[in-house]
Length: 356
Image (cartoon, rainbow, N blue to C red; front, side, top):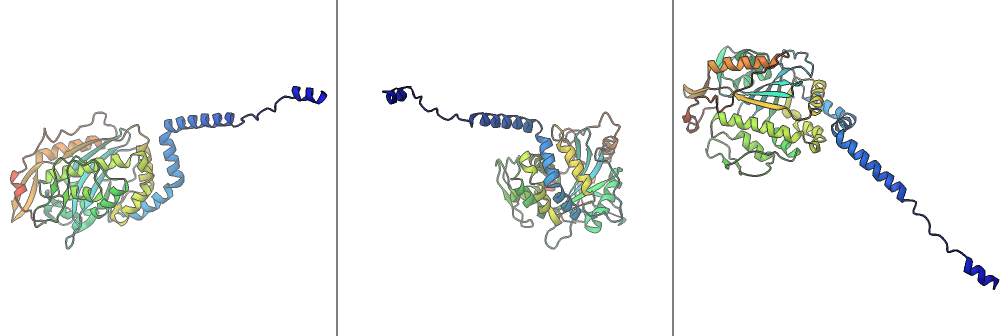
């Protein structure tokens, strides 16, 4: 009976407590808190990661791309001060000199988070500084590379050119692919039909365009220089938006490596990195204002030139001056192309232009 009673009063063994519940809740709580911090300070964390893991690689690649503009010394500019940058798209083809197919004079105002992009038609008839001749402005790079291009643009616009950045279009395709393509507002198929031009075809209404298609978009030459230059500015805007996406920031070192020998600039690597960091830390991407110099097309000795309007040049020179002045509180904003459209001859599209 004693054993029986003992059996009846014996308690059932307790199941072990699930000790993992509390630590799991703590871990989940920490993840939520850290996730919230990561969301709030996402930009700071990205910059921290960049500085820890990628800045050395980027600076090394940028140092390789550094090329002085002849004997022209680059100014000492703080990355927060307004500065001017001449963007040159070099479209070198077989058996042709390296002309600057795209010429965009830009003014960057870091404190205001604003950028002015002023497109200069490549066929603009002007004095080529250093050659003492008047010709197409895109010939300046062919004869004297960045220095002659900078000097020529400075004389034309009567405002300083602090820096230049030149990229060969051959490097554009891989760079666009590196960021997963770009969005482009192509409403009609783009196709070169002239036998004098290389074949290209870009389909309309695609959500994303790869590098080959983007290259075709900027190289298409069977409409006016006005439209072509507009496409160049649209591409720049689209690419910058794509590159600034968080998912693509980690690809910046790869992009710079891809650019490699296709990219040259007289901006020092530290300046570029500091400026890029300050740009990224803004609450939004820069506000970009666009404008294109206006004028009339004219044939001279069988060659097509673009005569710039003196009135428009005066207007643009004043606008640039206001943007470069750090004390300017009321910038002269460019009028829209629709409001200030030039009188470019409609016959230009039907003329096979002589590349000169």
